[in-house]
Length: 225
Image (cartoon, rainbow, N blue to C red; front, top):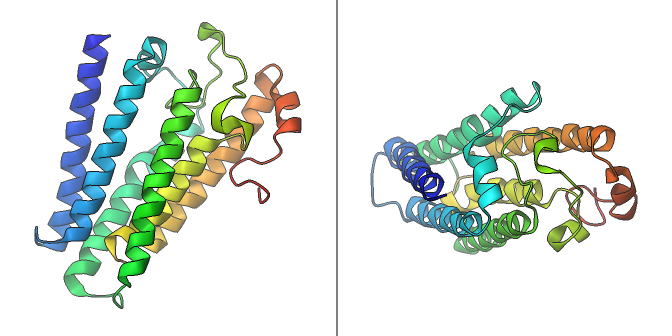
């Protein structure tokens, strides 16, 4: 358990280093408050997730020792977890350096921060409610996988993806870059694709999921989809 948490902290440190390098390296300066706000928000979200994980040894084990998921998920994970975010950060940094965008109003950036906080809280809530919150798409038969219906899963079937998508779209506003919305939108589209494919997998392979989906109709956004 302790080794898994230590590994988690090392992952956070590495992730923050990569994020900072992409943001401030592409911006060419350190005095960019938008970048520091995003970095601080990302750190807070990562630490909150670590606290949740520390209270659930089984979830720590699941996310620390990642098992093989669906073959189609590998490329999607690469885009959603690495390529997409890096593209957003670098695009926004270059935008800050070369002033491609018209200045985003402070109100819009503030709204982005609020949306980022709310979306990060939604992901944390989903993780807290779901002991099967895996990093890959797989039916966890080795852990007695069952349908989770509590917490945010009462309202949408994939609240984790909903929060991740919202955070991705909020990031360009936080960073003050209209151009960064392009890779953010692409990353969100890939997340939506993953949602569709995972939902089909759960329908086909997880007992009682179809009945749950009949009660909770929406995948990501209540009353929309």
